[in-house]
Length: 278
Image 1 (cartoon, rainbow, N blue to C red):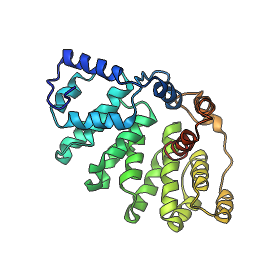
Image 2 (image 1 turned 60 degrees about the vertical axis):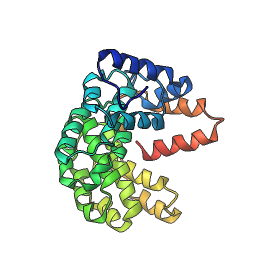
Image 3 (image 1 turned 135 degrees about the vertical axis):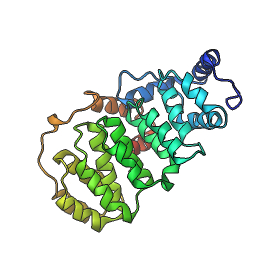
């Protein structure tokens, strides 16, 4: 399909969905269903590099008409919508408006994290613009703010803002807490002394505090002695109080590993995403 010059209307959009189904990968679909952890997500089964190519082509044409015709039924439709925004060369206010309109469709970590990583325009946007996401009560919108911090604002001069943000987010949602712990772990990798001081004086809930330390200790860049010292900072907590968007989440990931246990490349990739992208 000529995704750049196509005239987007209901008829052509239906053809587009048919095109997506035609290039789908059944094995990838089954794998992705397992790691997304959301039974309500309808997946066609297309790998991210292909979705990025599609989004980039659409962004060169009438992307506004595409977004209007987008039914947001399938995971790939939502992902393409979000990825398009990362390729736009538009003014800051217009971009922020389009992102605000998109965030309501996010309902899983994969769309959130992939789209945020692609929004490279944020490297030139004031960090305070993230307040609207970080203060949002929708857990997926809040996660957008946290992941944008991680992807585009990981600089020493932003540490105070980052740590204050981590202290102030009080959403009792598993994927928000995991994003915060992931953010703190990367802060420690880059700025260990300042982050260690934060870990000793933070206002995090016990789950997020402990998970941040666990993620730091998962890193091969931290020596064994340091890991043992960090583990002494862990706190006792009751995991039953943490709300998950899918109660069988751990089972999804365990079965995914079993299913692909004979593929070492997959195992390495899976572990990377589980440790660093949740």
